[in-house]
Length: 142
Image 1 (cartoon, rainbow, N blue to C red):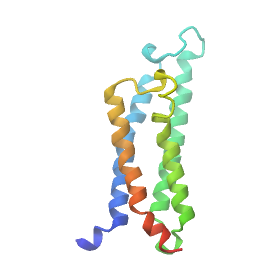
Image 2 (spheres, one colour):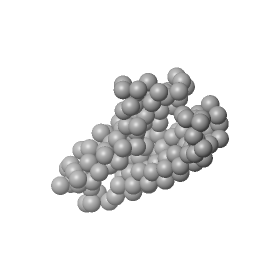
Image 3 (tube, helix red, strand yellow):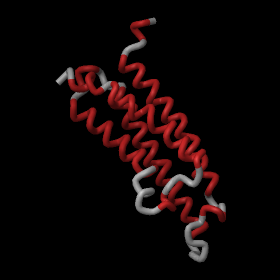
């Protein structure tokens, strides 16, 4: 059993956990489509359909980042390099930064409620911890 509890496998579990929790966020974006409470500019004729744009952008962008990180986490040991680790970190920061980057400048860009904020923390923290947990594995093979 102990041979399976490696730093890399723990990181993989943390990342998969964060990504699975993140599917809830994608669902909530889907449920906002057409909801008048989530229209930023109700007088705009595109307001009702623009949320589709956000849903598809989130869906494909998020899944692209998730698939990329998962591929990099399952690379064979000889292929793990510092550059690959940095790519993984940049993918995750690009994935999670939009949750918080705008809030200091415009409160409207923050999560709509505390439940959403908790959701964001629960989905972001495990993968970010995981990337730093495996940093040594990507730097030791170079």
